[in-house]
Image 1 (tube, rainbow, N blue to C red):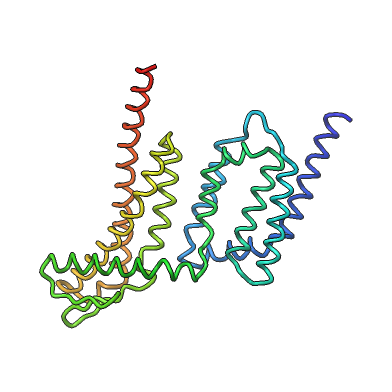
Image 2 (tube, rainbow, N blue to C red):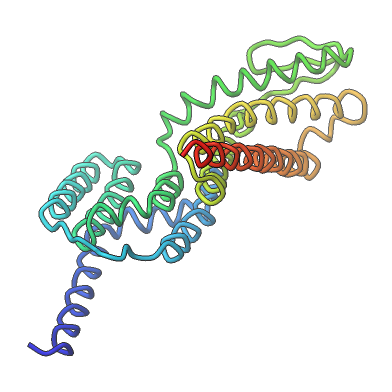
Length: 286
């Protein structure tokens, strides 16, 4: 068999695989793209998915690919089974995760687990781009709403603003602020987790450094969201109740997100210095 005919067969096999993949996973793929485009809670996928593909291209293929067809076919078979079972139950999250599982199976089949490990960062970003189930969002959002309300109310009291807190409702004189699920900070937490993973994966070289950075995103997201509630209540009390919504409200969110990103960048810089010092000490001992 000539090199040209072998290459033609490989391209034909890749084309058939792509067609079969699209047929099997067309529904989860299109609904996921639709949610990214139309749902504000899922819009981060429009950024994370292309970024993940770019990172895959940037990292490239391992030098010595070792296909593992048996393991790859097992992962593919499990993903296809999961896709059909979740389709019968109309469970979107599991359907979409089966799509990512099938992609992982194809990678293992063609290049082996080493390639999957090489692409660990884009793989995690793709997982984060899948919207969480509504029941999980509700479970996570409520504690975040309450924590943001508590922090906001505490800061308002510190600034001598008369305030009464009832759950996620902050009562001010003549005005009440309701910290809704959309203002719980879950969206900013997801975005900051993705940013923390991205910065850690690109800038840091140790597992402990990346772990510290990612864990740091959680208190930062909670604190920033509580401060946003405080700023809103402060402006409502001292300036105008109209500032609780509209352009000003969204502007506060963007400005505070930039502040959170700056904090993550600052911590990442500190961690790079610590990693550098640690490597220097290890070389000195050796």
